[in-house]
Image 1 (cartoon, rainbow, N blue to C red):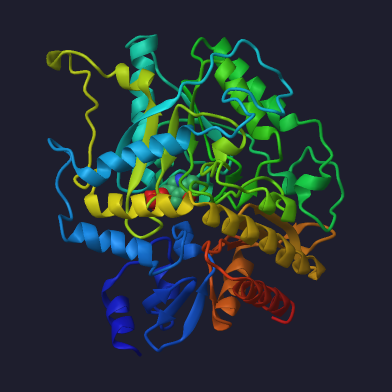
Image 2 (image 1 turned 45 degrees about the vertical axis):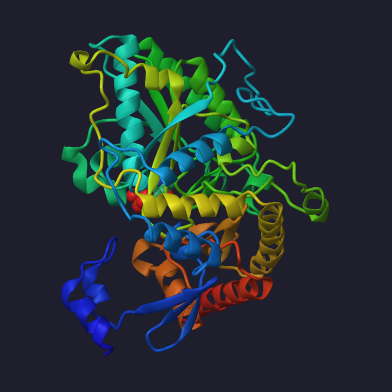
Length: 503
Ligand SMILES: *Cc1c(COP(=O)(O)O)cnc(C)c1O
């Protein structure tokens, strides 16, 4: 066995991994990467089909990112944000706020174009104005959670008990506050006694929704669903019931457009606008977890064709966030994974002037936000993030992403011919492919059958690396992925799925 693989097995404990399984075989040891390709210590090449667990945007060894980090390295790598400002963090904060507030032409910030429940005197949303830096997705959510908690107690009174609402299957990170917001029993149950209670409400999982009366078809379940938006009705009910208790929800926490770790659950067009409208009308703060969806991952529009691509011009807003795609401005916008292009661990929680102002006071009033991490505002991370945003906002990059979205859609269609594929759900540049025993019945594989794991192992043998979420195979190509590379990813997936039948 390779020397490094031996050291790994001797000393390292891997995340979300049954280590008994891990120790059974030689792990792939990654030595280098270039674009969408990863290379192991034996020189074998793989496609990075889940963008290194949803972090990478522009590919590995991007010259602009490498240069930006090297330039910063020659000045300083890290100084503390406790007491000092620094150049790249200041520039990055401004750039993030500007990007997050750019609302596409013709859309307003507070109403959804699809709002079925209409505008009901909802307060207009505030602009995002301030950035609190931290280290990863979990901490970005912890910061939002603590800020929302204190903000609510300061506005509703110190005796109030702020309550949070999130979605079925929600995943917002692995620290205790973030886990409290989560609703994946498999991950979260074990910590029950340590968590604070939060409520959950149905997320729109059209493919397996009990309200969807449609028989399975060979297309994305969102397209043929037959329902009366019962899921939105449940959100309305939940907010109304909590109001009756005399303690309206303090905040509604959600992943916009697509829930990742829940199993790549996409929201049907119109859902997000309606539920955020309801939340706002009940006075709840909106906490958008864009840790996965941020920085262009959810694409430009629902559907991209040649006309869309041709119409992209210098004036096309890059729409880097999923919330912007539906014209929703949250009170807290949490970003991490792709912030630095996936190069360095860094996160940010963006919030409004109003929230910020609630923490102002005389020193001895102790209104200070007592929270912070050692690497807050790290210079190397900030430099990488600045370079990544520069790339993302160029016309060329917007066009490249639109083209990739279109090609991705076209290539995915071939998979419908496989009887073990029940649903293919693409949102922009991410797709979840749900494996089933038979598409006509939607019968799921049991956890014990490890269908997702087996397909991903078969894909790895064919030079394509990704990780499943249960029975859902995730494809999340880096933005530099070529059409040939996409084809290779999808061919490997198809072969892996076909092999399930012969096992
Ligand atoms: C990954 C993820 C997190 C947690 O981020 P970490 O950097 O792993 O702590 C939170 N929310 C969402 C939506 C994520 O995908």
